[in-house]
Image (cartoon, rainbow, N blue to C red; front, side):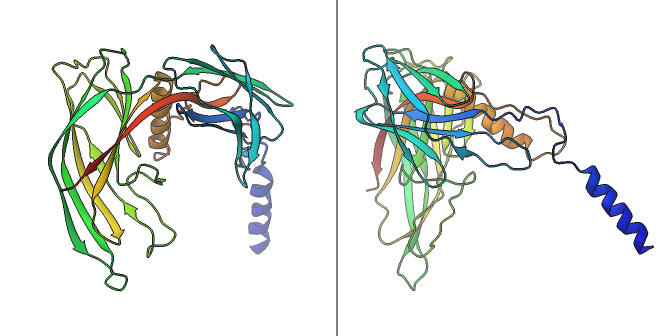
Length: 311
């Protein structure tokens, strides 16, 4: 009987070939990840997709030629900076230009591939806000280190002016600190709970049917094609908490960013892929990309950060 099970085990192992063809293109492709903001440094992450479904590792591409071309300037050749896990290309000579609607072209030349992408710098968002019923309530937490947790609840009425520049794609985020890095949806995972601030602020937008919105990990992407800036406004329901603060909570941060339609489409597909991944019987979803000859996203973004202080 033992011999039977041993033979069966060997047959199963031999039948599980690692090079089985699932009908999925596994040829390695360059992956570009870049959101460029006016007056910031160029920082373009370039990796290579895995050559096998069984070795899912994105390796940095070193030694590539990376050029940025703008209508108003000569092509800019980026220098290289490679970290431990990811490969970044940057420039010590010039920053991202600030002119709105400036067309930006990317060319990446590697030993195996040449990929290109085109995007632009969106205009700076124009908006006004009214704070209603925004309350922060303190509760004691971890008496050993004297830190506190804060509950936050309230509303912000936001009006975005789309008349002057005609731009209709935006991102809206509410956080305690705008530069915090977020993990899974709705939470941050910290390495040191005694010293790190936890930000669990959530943002909900009840909206008329005309608004096309996309809920993502750190806020909303919004298509305001049907938005009337003279009549309509967005109501931001802020809920959540900021934990482990050493003192009083004196502010939260509202970030409104102009984004491109490509970035909106990219986020839609990323969310759809995440949802499909939770269901074994769902159809696979291909993530949107504006990289010709490769994968990823290359897009401009233009944000305004507004500090909202508690009285």
